[in-house]
Amino acid sequence: MKKLSARRRHPLAALVVLLLALVCTGGLYTLFAPAGKVKADETAQSLAIDEGKKLYAVGCASCHGTGGQGSSDGPSLVGVGAAAVDFQVGTGRMPAATSQGAQVPKKKVVYTQAQIDQLAAYISSLGAGPAVPTKNEYGPEGADIAKGGELFRTNCAQCHNFTGAGGALTKGKFAPSLEGVDPKHIYEAMQTGPQNMPSFPDTTMSEQNKKDIIAYLNAVNGDETESPGGLELGGLGPVSEGLFGWIFGLGGLIAVAVWVAARTAKAKKS
Amino acid sequence: MSSQDIPEENLPAEQDNAHGGVGVVDEKNPFADPGLPPHEHRVQDIDERAAKRSERAVAFLFTVSMLATIGFIAAYVTIPADKSIFVFPLGHISALNFALGLTLGAALFCIGAGAVHWARTLMSDVEVADDRHAIEASPEVREKVFSDFRQGAKESAIGRRKLIRTTLFGALTLVPLSGVVLLRDLGPLPEDKLRHTLWAKGKLLVNMNTNEPLRPSDVAVGSLTFAKPESLEEHDEDFQNEIAKSALMIVRIQPGNIKDKRELEWSHEGIVAYSKICTHVGCPISLYEQQTHHVLCPCHQSTFDLSDGARVIFGPAGHALPQLRIGVNDEGYLEALGDFEEPVGPAFWERG
Image (tube, chains in turn green, red):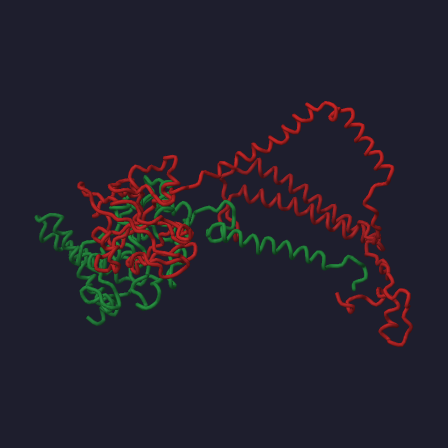
């Protein structure tokens, strides 16, 4: 048993777990075939919850408590929902290195997506919360980019800047840049409000609103986003551009003028 | 410039004696004009081949400029406006913008560089001294101007035909009034416009995202919502003026975590509504941190504690953010229970 647990982070562990789950599901399906598909799904779900509980006990319980009730080192996870787990673990913010510091930054993801799904299944079994969104919800189909821009400027731009370049908050906290963030994670962040970010639940910001915002971000700050003018200087607005013009533009002109005047044209150099 | 920087031959001859302390100083004129230093030639003045090289260099720069201008026209005509290329280190940029900027920049730079090179190497560089002349014109010229003026005045009959003269002065005096009258657009004085907003008893809180009135169950703990007064629509003529005063941010705090007694009274089940306008210089302020309940102003870092009556805890703001008293109407929607108690935005009225 010890040997098995030592290999739980092996790259193929997820595959093994998945195969196991499939075999069990298949086996159970044959046993309970008359009970129908729902039962099989439930069984797969409860298996995922069991696996997630094991992962939780190893990786999360020291801060969030053995039953997800929270401790002085980490908040309660009852009712945060699968979306919060998928965001926090899927962007590498969790597990956090320390509970100290201004905020937990994004870092390398340590769990596989299958393990994250199991953790999410376990956490959502503790109390109902927002589910992981489907591609249908955050995909580009049917999104209004212009409307998304308006919504982004109303709700998000105060912290994340007009094009999602990010910005500073109080006491070392900051709103991270949204460049290159998976649309699914943006959706989950709006829904769950990670760390000091307020949440924007479906009741006040509809699913369509969120879809529009994601489409806007992809248009202005995506991997393929063009910057027709060339150097975008971080997209921080006219301040960075003005500073660049003053320091490098005017500075360069002054340097050239000094260089031209400093070189004598005379044959006899003095 | 200190005297050490001046080449020896440029200094007046007397100075050597003066410094020596034993020589005789010219007592009549100890600061005689030393005159210009001897002219030094450039390579191009001495060597005709160097001059030819410079000529070719200047001509080359001007030719490059011509080619760049032709390139500019060609780029404008041939490159489609939506074509995008990758250029290191600029990233994905518009091919047309890049080509136009590069060619126009080269065309202008080569004209400038050629002109500078021409002036420094080939144009005459002989030092020229030119004495100042009197500003006043010669007596003959002055006499001619005055007599011409007198003749003109006489021929126009401005002195004889007094009606024309008087009406001309009247017209010239009145014309500037049209400019003065336009200044009226600076008024009228705001009177009490800044003291009141659209919020009034019974006005519903409308979600700015969905344009629907808010219910208490819509607002979750830790969420942030922006609201406007009911019946204010974005296409209204005075929308910007009104929203600038009545913009609202709505958060929900566990009632047990609200420290200020009045804030709790004015809230509905922990839902609090505060003005979104900073009390320092009126920036929109909504950098809300849901764990600390702090709101930060992006302009000057004023920080307000929304769990303690929006008290100022940092920065230059003079007083707390105004809170809007809210409740729930019979149909279960959030409504205002009146206008803000104090004017929103900067606190200038407290000073006068």
